[in-house]
Length: 530
Image: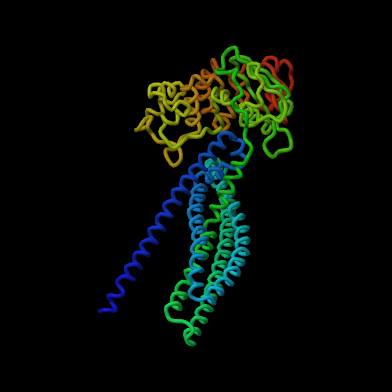
């Protein structure tokens, strides 16, 4: 009984220390989780802001699937990476040092053995870590390619089935996914090999320590307590190192995702965005002019727009035409401030600006691309994109002007119907009408940029949409890029672009009389002999 009573206080302090250890671990994890969550949220905000400033040209270059997975799943992987790696690095920097100091007080020979083994283990971890990193880089590249193929397949599924080549494209998707599977298995092989090497050397070192301790006990050179304490603490000494190694391989995707996000954030973006003060709103007396403007996409050595010069005044409807790849979308992106000129001069109401990525200018226009993005939300929320504080009456009026009322009336939940990702499907024509309703709702935006808005619509849908769109052009400056030249009948002025050069400009009547590139494109569209 006396011996048992003597153990009460040691047992009490043991459980107290154990409780303290778990409390410290809980506090550390809580702080790191909060930091990782906040850091990843800030990173996502910075990424989305960067994408907004760089515009659709970056998304077209990087791939829609890649950018979507980067902003959603990629940021989640970054959060997991920060949570695990910071935690394990902190453990690895603190726990082994404390344990090693205490082991030296128990048995110097065991402490020296552990010190000798650690550099060997770290050396193998570094060698295998480099190999795993290279394989993980290849895997992440395959992941980006798979994401882009998946999104492209979903977008074009109806077209692929219509053309009868869906099976062929399915084989392509299979090959991409098979390549990604092989890359993943290569990473796993390196991870397993690294784990085996680490376990082998740590187990061997613990066995060596156990042999020395056993010989010391047999020779009477050590008492039982320091021998048992050293043998128990030896595995704990290597545990943070093993945890770090395992989590390093488990979070390589998060590391690569962070590297990809940081690469986007380091891309140059427009500076001097608040220079424009001469155009608070576009009106009948406003003027925009381009003089010998050259524009290149980032990373391109050739000008995608070359020596472009034109001038527009007041409310006009400007058609932009040309063959595919001629530079129509590049000009629209430049007008929207998504691309910046390399050379030339831009003036707005007589004020020179280096580019049109001016806050004041971008608050004046509405942008309608080929496929307007529909957010996951109600129809009313999507219409109120530019005017989130708009009343329901104003939203309904804009929807009526865009020709949406009849369709919305057929929906059980009306304007509260959820559309967008994973919700009710919306046809191409309905999506364009929602984009038009956004423009109708915000009457303060007097500049409209259209980039092939009817390119993916059938003739009947386009004709119905045209009746809705034309009234919107009144009292607006309109830039309308299209390869469907019947729209030129509604234009006041036409810019003809060929291989990045503005080869003709003038009213439709002037260009017909000139009998040049404009007439040639018209004849090509009608299938006439040149």
